Length: 240
Ligand SMILES: [Fe+2]
Image (tube, rainbow, N blue to C red):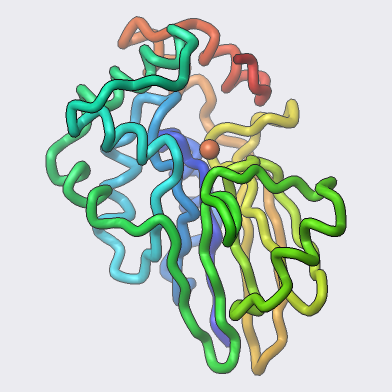
């Protein structure tokens, strides 16, 4: 049997990542998947990226926030997001990233895949079609049929919508890990999933666990970052 730890949308929330790692003992996993968005909205991008950088069995891709950080670091203009408080977070992150972590982000793809026995697994930030597509479990069934059609992958792992779900459509297993570090559903606990593949059988389990939210709040306050994010982490809701 192969065991995969599925993480995503950490958003520099290292206290949340740490809580998960203390809870599940990462060494028990064959692979650790990260669907991207390592960065922005909390003040621990370096700690977060370093942890993945040092793991030989980590399979990581970039999310939209990571892509924007790399754009800023290239000296490109930031057109979006427009809201000042969001821009502040992007600029703070790009200024505070350590060079080895920038190099690591630059090395990552926007999507990837792996094969376990006869099972092919695709890893995406949004969907297999579009890294910026937010796929919710409530999306029309038609959309899942489209994504399943001609899919070379029996399992599609994704993030970006920050909504954990597991759905099997036309034989394709769609798994959204939920967000480790920035939940939107009013439950601030960290979300992750475990995927087990055993002689062609696939099982998926989601988890929500508490973490030290006040460590994140302290980080934001120490760097004079907008209060709206302290509130966002405390209540687990998108506020802007
Ligand atoms: Fe995200």
